[in-house]
Length: 250
Length: 316
Image (cartoon, rainbow over all chains, first blue to last red; front, top):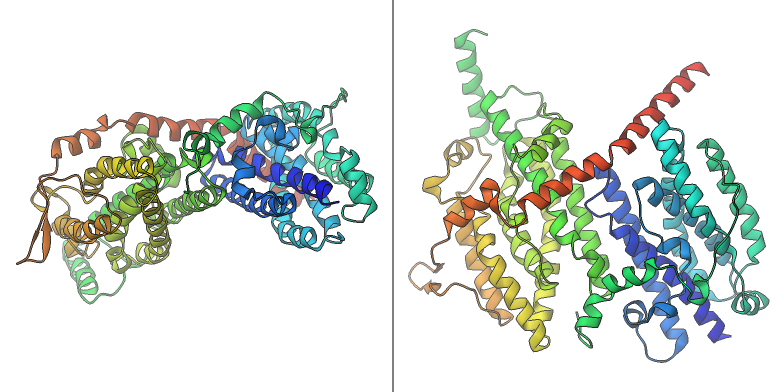
C-alpha cells in the first residue's frame, strides 16, 4: 500500500507546490496592496502544505530523498500535479478563478480526509483544512465581486472560466492508485466529492452571474505526469538554484 | 487666526514635544510639522512597497522550500508595513491614492537602496542583513517619535524587521560557511550592497537639510552620521564573524574612540541614484505603475459590486 500512498501524497503535495509557486509570481504586482498580502499569504500556506506533504511522501518512499529533493530535483514527467494548477496566472481574474475551482475541491477533499484510516494523512488534512476554508472564502468572494462587478470584469472572468473549465474534470481523476487506497479507507470515494463540488461551484457561479461553458471537453494527464507546456518553464525557474549549484545546503 | 494665537499654539505644541507628550491626529500641529511627517512617512511607505520587488525577484527561485516560505513571509510583512504607514499618512490628512500617484509620477522618493538589482540568491542574505539592519537602526528611534500613530506603527514594524535582519544574516552565514562557490557569492553580494547600505542613512550631517528641524520636533532623534557610525560598528564584527571582508580598504578601528573609521562614501553615486539614474529606478517605478494600471478593472469591479450590494440592501 505504501507505494500507492506515496503516489497519492505526492499528487497532493505537487498540487500545493505548483500552485504556491504560481501564486508567488504575483508578489509585488497585485491590483491593491491588500490583495498582494492575501495572495502572498495563500502562497505561503500552500508552500507550507507542500512541505508537510512532500516530507510525508519522502518518508513513505523510504529512499532517503528529502522533501526538497522531491520538490526541486525531479524531471517534468515525475510531477503529478493537476493541469489546472500549472496554468499561467493571466490577469487577476484568471488567478482567482483557478484558485476558486481548486479551493472548492481541496476543501471538500480535506474534509473527507479527516476520517482517513491513515492517521498521518488525516492530521495533515486537519491542519490544511483550516487554511483552505479561508482560501475558499477569499476566492469565492472575489469570483462573485468580479462576476457581478462591471461589464468588463464580468467578461474577463467569464473568459477565464471558459478557459479553465476544461481542467476541472481532472480534479476527479481516478486510477489504480485511488482504487487501492479507497479499498483500505485511506481516501474517500471521489464521486461523493464531485457532487458536492458541483453544487458548491454552481452556487457561487450563479451568484456571480457566470455560466459554465457549453463546450465540455476535458483534459487530463497531470496525475500521470503528462503536463501542459507551461510546467516546464515553471520548473526551470523553480529548480534553477538546485540545478545550477548541485549538492549544496542553503 | 490671529497672529498671537498662532504663536501661542506653536509654543504649546513645542512644550508638549519637549515634555515627550505624543502628538495625536486631532491635536493642533504646525503645517510644516504635518508636511514633514507626510513626506517622511509616505517615503517610508513607498520604500516598503517598492522594497518588495528586489526580494520578490527571488521568491520563485528560492533554493529550498524553507527559504521560499521565509522569503514569502518577509515580503508579505513588507506589504503590511506599507499598509500601516499609508494609514498613518491618512491620519495626517493625506490621500492614499494621491500619495501612491506621487510615487508613480516620480514626485515622491523612496529609499534608493531598492534601485540596485538583486543578481544572486546571496543578495537575499545581504539585503536582510544590511538593508534591514540599516532600516532597524533608522527605525528603532522612530518608536519614540513625537507623532503617536507613526511611533506606534514603528513598534510593530521594528519587531518584524529584526526577524528579517536575522534571516538575512542566517542566509549569509550559511553561504559564507558553505562551498567556495557559495562563499564567493556571499562576498560578491556584500561587495555590492555595503556602500549602498551606508548611503541609506542619507547625506552627511552638514549636507542634511531636514535634520535640525526634525530633531527639534523629535521626529528624528539622531543625526545621519551618528546612525551610520552605529551601523558600521555593529556590522563590521558581524562580517568578521562569518569570515567575509568589508569592501573598504580604508576601514580601520580607532582604539581611542572605540569606533571604526571608514573610507569616503561615493556621494556622486548617491545623488545619481536619488535623481533617478540608479540601475533599477525606472524598472521599479514602472512595475508599481503597471501593477496599479493592470489592477484598475479589479478595483472598479469591487467598487461597482459594493455599490450594487448597497442598493440591493436598501431595496430589501
